[in-house]
Image (cartoon, rainbow, N blue to C red):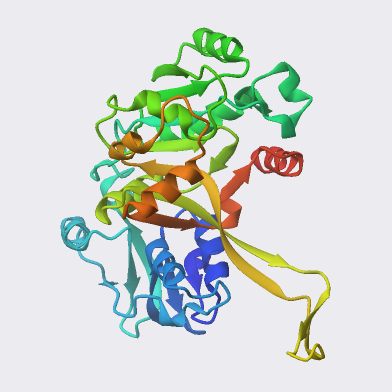
Length: 351
């Protein structure tokens, strides 16, 4: 149980990593004697970040300080189920008469593997952009399309697809150009249980241009992902986040902290040194390459024109469309498109 207990003084960044490490979807905020102070979910963290708070900010102002609890001795299973259904919680702590945490129940432990909760991603289409040359991964990509570069015993694209099939997605559209026949032959041999259709780019069309070929063919918000990234996030929550906030496009962004390994100089108006900052750190939200897109946006795309998804986002913004951002921890994002990250991913997926 100690894996989900945290102090109110820890930072947003540390809380995100803690959530990423635990199998649960909620952390319990306690004092030094394990008295329950509140609960913290990824939704609480996401709201704090999107409200402009620094990753280094303590969570003490962002957790739920009026949590739903169960008391010892706990009720029978029927009443526990009613409590979960009434509050739609992922986890409910159990406390004693002194409000000390002694146990907890999860939705899965009460209902059994989450089968009682509908997965909103069931049958949501997925588009995988796999037409690029992957020059950063040469010499692998001199022989293979980027999507087939191996991560241990499976190519990248199978790892990506598994993240989606785990939440019920069965319909995949793969855009192809470079070494297209090799990628087609791989899936012919694989004969997967999910459906795969290929979108042929007549020439390289960037990270969004080939989506135009799907205009009129998709009738619900769909996922779009680059073929060189793996995101270990809750795709079901991502999709709910997109639909509940009525966004036209939602991008997944990774929290990143960059430390300059030098002292930086700030100058006054007369050119004199006003301040020396020793190894300053800067915090950013970085676009990962995973999106949820409404099919209505496909009408914006030009035909047979090189067009990046950043162009689509910029165009949509100008037209007053709603663009959402879904933050994830930097440890949840694997960018296999560059050698250093590729080697790190190999090590992570082996351990």
